[in-house]
Amino acid sequence: MTRSTYTVTGMTCGHCVSSVTEEISEVDGVTDVAVDLPTGAVTVTSAQPVDDADIRTAVEEAGYRVVA
Image 1: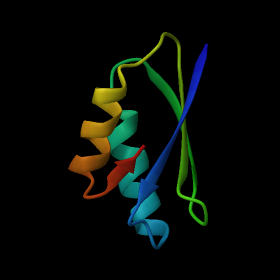
Image 2: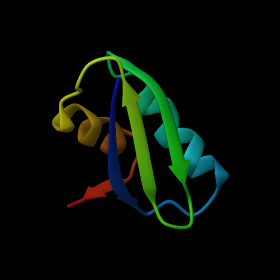
Image 3: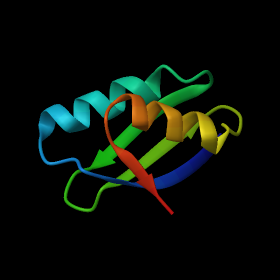
């Protein structure tokens, strides 16, 4: 099992969290997504390592941004 944490900007409410969670959950291999709204931390759990670019794309499709 692999866990990676990303910082996502622009989330302000529960709907934002749901959008980000839904998009990231569709990435192949992702088994769990945990979002901490106050900090913007998004922890992605997967069976195998997931490409950071795939997570970044999913977050952007939800309308938000991953910051380095």
